[in-house]
Image (cartoon, rainbow, N blue to C red):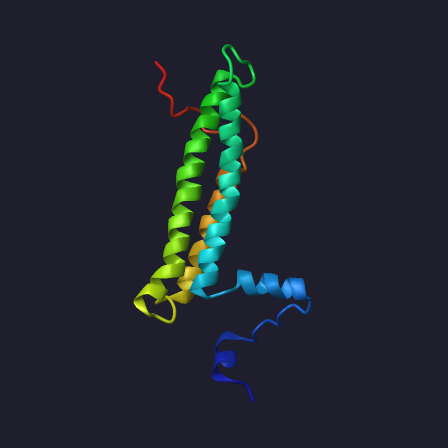
Length: 150
């Protein structure tokens, strides 16, 4: 006999049998606020490394006078991407991850109010971050820099 949930929503998909796939499935489909907070923190760490590479390119360009490592337009683009990466893809996910992890524990709640919505909030953030940093050609980067020009 099937349960009311099975009749209403259909069959529940089977979990993968491999241990690695099972662990990956558990992390990607979790509703636990602590695991979602950890996912945000790992994402922030990955983008912190990307922001570090951008910072190293900036520092290499500024290491000595008349350096031609980066063209002026490319330097402005890297500078802009570094600022956006560090603010929107590192600082914001760190704050959200810490809040996701600790606030339910601090107020004594068992979980977040809407755990599925909380879990779904991570994936658009992650997808948007990957899309915004996946520009490789100079034509696709932001055309202006944060540095003001006349």
